[in-house]
Length: 272
Image 1 (spheres, rainbow, N blue to C red):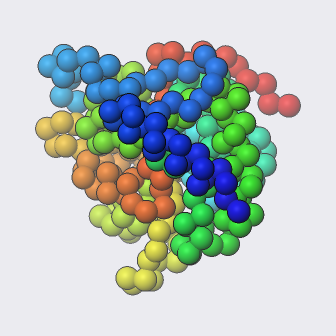
Image 2: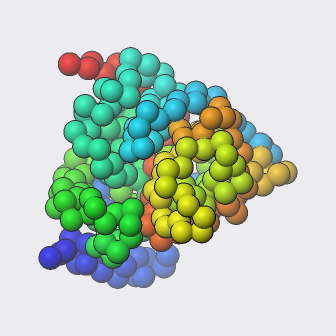
Image 3: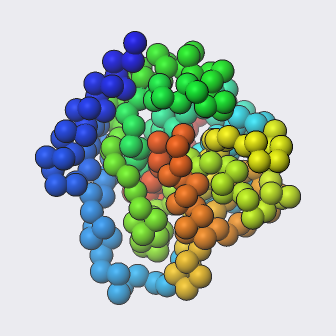
């Protein structure tokens, strides 16, 4: 019933084991960049102790469009400013947003990025999660098809886990920002009063998928600066431990879109 998830992820795990821990690049085509080891950034001694990218804060409009708001923040950051949340929603054609949907949006605007995940395709094991239960049966075929077509389209999908240390080095290099899928409740426990989190009743809280932009890091405080489209604050800081826990919990597939600020072709995209 789920041949793409079971078969391809089995192949990826086998290949990864044979490559001594290196990531497995499952994309075809040449319009991408990739970082296969921590050393690609350069010597740690040359990195600053803190770095922050000016990313405008954009609030989501509905409960389902946090990912679109994050894409819009990224587009604005790289100089693409002729777009709106409504435009992105029309291009996406669904209110059940997966990370692969966001990858296709970034590609439409010629943004250079890599897509990191630990699961290729829709994970049927999420069928028991309240967050996924309603939409997953309808999304399985659609999402698996998008993954298959992404390979043909040259979208750079790399099947491996990313550590908080790697993310911090990428941010400190000044070359990247990232869109990360997190558990909203785990991320927002320290500022619940300032965040729109529907259906949070006492301790009866399951996984709640949410996207944020990672745009800064302070090594002294060991904190990331993020842009949270559900937050009333324009600037949020979160400990690296808290961000990693929210990003690596069951339900996220550890999805992360690493966006290049240097290599992006700042082409204007015409909305028809």
